[in-house]
Structure formats: structure tokens, C-alpha cells
Length: 494
Image (cartoon, rainbow, N blue to C red; front, side):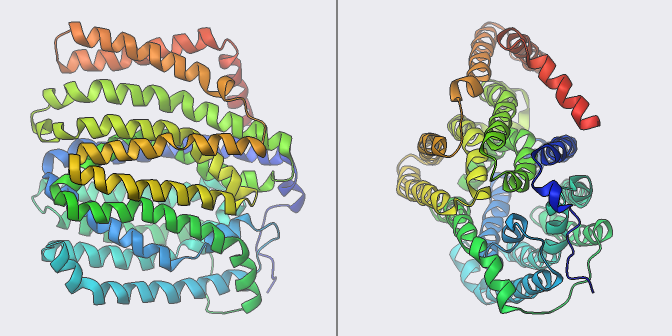
């Protein structure tokens, strides 16, 4: 068998123009995918399910998911990232070695979950429905591990048109299942059924779009070569998991299921713009930045454009969320129960604004091999999170937790400044126009909201009118924006 399974032309990997072309096409594809998937997820998880479920039921899903996400770390020590970042083509021996190692780890995680079930049931006062969800998520971890190698192959080739197909099926199946069974009164069990169907669907779809025959094989040489990048990368992932999912687990003991449910609702709303407008860019840029790591000029341009277009959409979306969420909780009767989460929503939106800038930067640093630096950033953010959020949550409840997350978000300025040592960025030029436009739009909406009656028509008009006003402001502030968009569309259609 031919040892090389990589199908990307080696000259294209080092050709900035070729990579940029694939990046633009990939971003277009993932943008379309993201709008479809996030529209479905947003409608289900932020609009419909909060009406059908109680904060406590919502909180159970967040808690159990956080526990599994915590354990998921130990099923992967940077295997996928190591294969994607690897300059040379991965061999069949490399792929099967990583597949074998990951399966061993996943089986260990599943056994650990089963053994820890009595403790988790007692500590969090889970009922049997929550335990069933825990087991379903553990099994879905095994299903997810089966997709790792085919997904890596697609990402290395930058074939995001194929990579998005399983994701679309997974998201649609999961959300339709959860909403249907929640509507039928199944409560937490709705998530259990959705998780199982999503996992099975994803595995089948992945192997259809990227056939690969799994096999058990272990090569010490291959294992070590991948882990040179994988272990530092996974160390960052571990700290991120401790900072986020670990904190959710801890807050479950401080705030209870209802408090975590309210905080989770606020995070879903606050992070929605990132999921809509940032994730697809990040997905494409990591392998692309890896190919451009020896070309500082092109890398600087790519990062600048990524941050510019992410913030172009994220900033106004966050402003609209903060200003329009309060009247929405008044208009929709069954949304009154989420009103206590409005202050955390506002605070966490500040965190999202900084994440829109710093996530592409840490993504770039990882891609060029500066893992030790991003590891230091993650240590800082994790230490701040664990020092501030639990204490503030204990003293001030969910509002305190939101304040803690906001303070951690502001600390990201350190990463913004440090990144200037590796690439050339002009933050005023990159962020200025979208920030100014968002502030002016927000001021106008705030004024109109204070004098107009509260109704669904008024809220919808403020949202739509605000976006139109923002777009007009941008074309005034950045006259070349329309030309940039046209050039981007032409290049994506080439």
C-alpha cells in the first residue's frame, strides 16, 4: 500500500496564492454551513427549548455535557491537531497509530464514567434520566473518535465542502430530535435520544464523504513525531477545558442546576455571534496559517483580514443582543423565567467581543508553532477564571459569575499586544470602523427603545433597522468595503 495518503499537492502547501484561494473557498463553504447549522441550533437551543424546558432541566444538560467534555480531554492528546499541523504528509502508519492510541484512551474514559456514576449521582443529585444522558454522551465520545482520521484528511486537503456534510446532518438530526421529544414531554431524555442519533449519523456520513479503513497498528516513531506538537497543543486544550467546562462543573455545586441553566442560557446567547461568524473562519485558518507559517507578510495579511471580517459581524450582533434581549423577555411570556440572566448576558457579551479578536490570534500562534506562548496565555486565563468566578458567584450569584467572565475577557489585551511580536497588525485600522459603527448603532437603538412601546414589531424593526443603519455607516467609514466584498466573492467563485 502507498504510504502517502495526503492528496494535497506539496507545492500547493507552500504556495501562498494556492492556500489563500482554498481559504477563501473554505470560508464561503463554512459560512453557508454555519448559517444553516447555527440557525437550526439557535432556533432550537435558544428560542424553542427554553420555552419547553425548565432552567433546571436545561442546567442538567449543561452540567452533564461539561463532565463529559472534561473527560474528553483524556481521550485525545493533540492527535488531530498534530496531524493537521504536520508539515510532511502523514503516512498510513501515522494514521493507524493515532487511531489505535485514541481508541485505547476512549475505552478508558467510558469505563471511568461507568465507575464514577455513583459518585456523580450522589454529588449532583442526578436522577436516572440524567444518568442515562451521561452514559449516552460517554458512548457518543466513542462514536466521535471514529471520525477523527477521516476529518483530519479532509482538513489537511482543505476540502471543507466535504467536511461540512456530516456536521450538517449531525446538527439537524440532534436539534430536530431534541425539540420533538421535548415537545412531547420527555424532558432530559430528549437530549439523550438526540445525542445518540447525532453520533450514529455523524459516523456514517463521515465515512461516506471520506472513506478510510480503520486498523489497529502502533508505531513508536509515528506516535512521538505527532506528539511533538500534539502534547503542547493538548496542554492548551486541557487548560481551556479546566477554565470552561471545569468551571461549569464547579458552579453546579455553587449555583445549582437552575443557576447553571440561567448562566448557560446567557452564554448561549452571548456566544451565538462567535458561533455564527467566527467558527468557520477559525476552522479554515488553522491549517491555512500552518501552510503560511514561513511567510510573515502573507500571514499578517491573512490574520488581519480574518479579524476584520469576524469583528465586522460580531460587534454589531453583540450590541443588538444586549439591547434587544430585555424587551424580548417581556414580549415572550414563557421567556420571563430567563430575565434573571440578562445581566450575565451583558457581561459575557464583553467576553465575546474580546474573543472575536484574540481567538484568531491564538489560532495563528498555534499554527506557527508558538504553543508554549499560547499555553502561558491559557494559564493566565485559567488562573483568573478560577480565582474570580467561583468567589464572585458565591457572593453575587449568577451576576457575579458573569462579572468574573467579563474580567477574564478584558485580560485578553495581553495576548493582543504580545502577538505584535510575530506579525504586523494595526488594531485601530482592523477594529476601529466596526467598533465605531456598532457604538453609534447601539446609541440610536437605545434612544429609540426608550421612547417606543415594547412589542414584537418594534423589537424586530429596531433589529432590522439597526443592521441597515450599521451597514450604511460602514460603507461611509470604509468606502472600499464594497470592492473588498466583490473581490472576495469573485475569488470564491473562481
